[in-house]
Amino acid sequence: MSEKKEYPLEINGLKIDPVIFTQGFVPHCDIPICSGQCCDWGVYMDSEFKDVIMKHEQDVIDAMDAGQIKDSAKWFEKEPEEDHDFPSGKAIGTEVYKTKSGHEQCVFKGTNNYCSLQIAAEKKGYHKWEIKPKYCIMYPITIIDNVLTYDDSHAEKLDYCGINKTENFVHSVFEAMKEEIIYILGEEGYNYLNEYFHKHYKNKE
Ligand code: SF4
Picture 1 (cartoon, protein in one colour):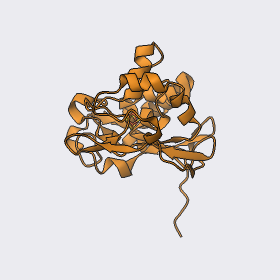
Picture 2 (cartoon, protein in one colour; picture 1 turned 135 degrees about the vertical axis):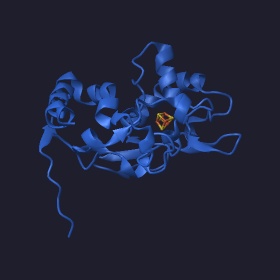
Picture 3 (tube, helix red, strand yellow; picture 1 turned 180 degrees about the horizontal axis):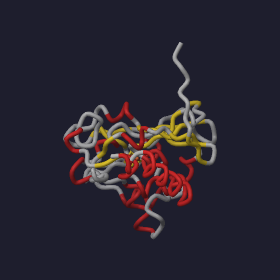
């Protein structure tokens, strides 16, 4: 029987896996270098978030390039699945499509490698992440069974920031993802973790 891991840190009921303080990462997400490779498999989101995206259907279509699928009936998987890491208890995945060169990627990833959901939000003057699924914002951080942790399964396949690309690492995932962690946990939550990180990890290097 596998042992249940204990997590000493908790913020707003969310447990924090200290791996985020020790796992190495590149300076920051850098699409001109990595081509947004983490988007190639699509993403799961709360099934209710689909409605948020669909409210902006035309804006998203307008943000897409000629090679992307404009028919919104082909954007999402048909059946949501049970997943208690999402508030509604159900998750839905985005579909993938093949580009002209035969490369498979999320329907919302343009041939220029940028996310049409983010482009659409920026064009409308919203916050850049207003209609972007939470797990896209957070990557390479993820939430599994109510634990904020590092997404190591995805990371095995990535050629720039992936878990095996240690030669590209300059600091920890926690240091690379400040803006994203503030977005998820708020300033107070981030400041608490930052203090913990400096006391238990950074100042011990
Ligand atoms: S929704 Fe956007 S950020 Fe998320 S996987 Fe698709 S292209 Fe990438």
